[in-house]
Every structure is written in structure tokens, then in C-alpha cells.
Amino acid sequence: MISILIPTYNYSVFSLVENLQKQCENANVTFEILVLDDASTDKNNVEENSKINSLENCSFEILEKNIGRSKIRNLLAEKAKYAWLLFLDADTFPSNSNFIQHYLEVFSRENSVIFGGIEYPKNTAENFSLRYKYGTERESISLEERLKNPYRSFITMGFAIKKEVFEKIKFNENLAGYGYEDSVFALDLHKRNIALLHIDNPVIHLNLENTGDFIKKSELALQSLSKFYNNGAIDGETVKILKTYLKIKKWNLLFIAKKLFALLKNPLLKNLNSPKPSLFFFDLYRLGYLSSLKSKDA
Image: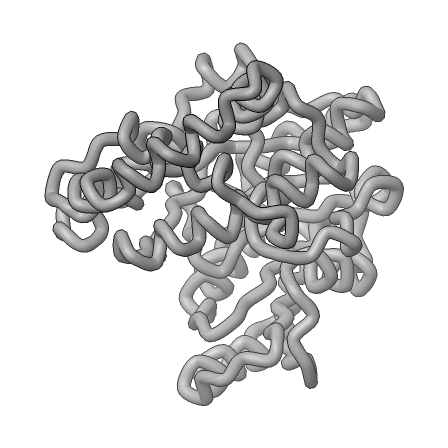
């Protein structure tokens, strides 16, 4: 028995739900698909998603006010009635026609959390270059590579978890903001010695931001990362860029990092907005931005 949980905001998920429903029926499993809309402002998407209520064992509900990424996921889990939860982001899609069956095959008493991986569609559009390159080289990791560091390579974009286990951990609602929820959640799993099983059953991440939006979201994520560290929600070893930042801070070199960032920011942005962006330059940009954050951002 499985509850598939999908939070959405200004995004159409009808085709995703339709595909998942057919897969569940083909797998002959007891299921429900719950979609919660976080107070979307796009009426066209809301109208499209409303058709979900016409599908058997599927429901679509709109929240009156926006509650954020962590709270809406926790609320979905509260509404779920089955033993296994499958969380999927709205902008994902199964990579194969046996996606649900592959998860069902590894549901057991021994397994508590299961992650199938992330893939990206073929996309060479110039304005998506940086996001696509980052996704394919940093997030779309093979099963062999993920097994080397199972908690660091975990992404909440698509994963299954026992409801009884999720109720003990949940998403941290005290940590508002965008970004690094994956790292916080994975660290909590690790601290509680909750086993994380990796399998080869990825979702495809469809909705790629253009370079300007991706850089802005990356900056917001770094602000969240700083807050998470200061609040003790994440340690200095879990995220590579934070680990590097803390070394620079320990060596009293933050002032140099800030000056270099001010000097190199525009040249770095020029490269990142080009058809062939460098992820090394993107790392330098993010490290410089993190080093330049004021106390109010942290």
C-alpha cells in the first residue's frame, strides 16, 4: 500500500498524476495520490490540476494560504493513510513505465528510506545551460557513485519512506527559506541511524530555470545554508561549499574572499550566462557570495 504525495505551486501536475495512477493500477497495488496546491496564483494551472479529482484514488486540494515547502510536505504526510509514502516534486516525471513497480519491489521491513536518483532531459537551450549542466553533472549521479556516500547524494525531489519513520523525523518547519532541505533531512536520517537505500529508478527533473533565475535561487539557498548552520540544523561536514567556507573563516581569510568576489563577480557572471558556463566558476561565485553574506542574512 502506498500514498504518493505531490506538493505543487503554479505548476500543472495532471499528466504526472495520470501516469502514476496508471502505473499503480498496472502494479495492482492499493494506492492513493494526494496533491496539495500551496495557494497558487496561476488560475490556468489550478483549473488543469482540478481534473485530478476525476481520477480514481486521486485528490487535489488547494490551500487558502501559502505555507512553504516543509510544512506542505508534512501536511501531505499527515493526510496520507498508507504505510509507505512516495514524495515527488511537481516538476518531476517517472523515467520508466515500471517506476512504481520498482519501488514496490524494495518495500520491506528492513528498508525505511529509498532514493531512486535524478535524471535530466536532453536540453541544449542556451538560457538553460547553467541549470542543465549543474543538474547533469552534480545531481544526476549514477547508483555506483551514490552508494559511495549515500546521505550526501540524497535529494528529496523523489523518494520513498515508511510513514512511521517519517513521523519521527519530518521536514524541519522551523527552517524557513529555500534550499538545502535535502541536506538537513539527510543529516537527520544519518544522526538517527536510519538506513538509506539507493536504487536505480530515477525521476526526470523537467522544469529547468533560466540562468538568471537559477543564480538567484542559488543565492537564496546559500542564505538558508548559513542560517541552517548557525541554528545547528546542519554541520560543517555535510555540504562541501560550507566546509570550504568554514576553512576560509578559520584561517581569517574572509576579507580576502570578499574582496576577490567584488572584483570577480561580473566576469564570473559573464561566464555563467554564456552558452558554455563553468561549474568551477559557479563554485567560486557561490563561495564568494557565501563569504560576503552579512550577519542579517545569516
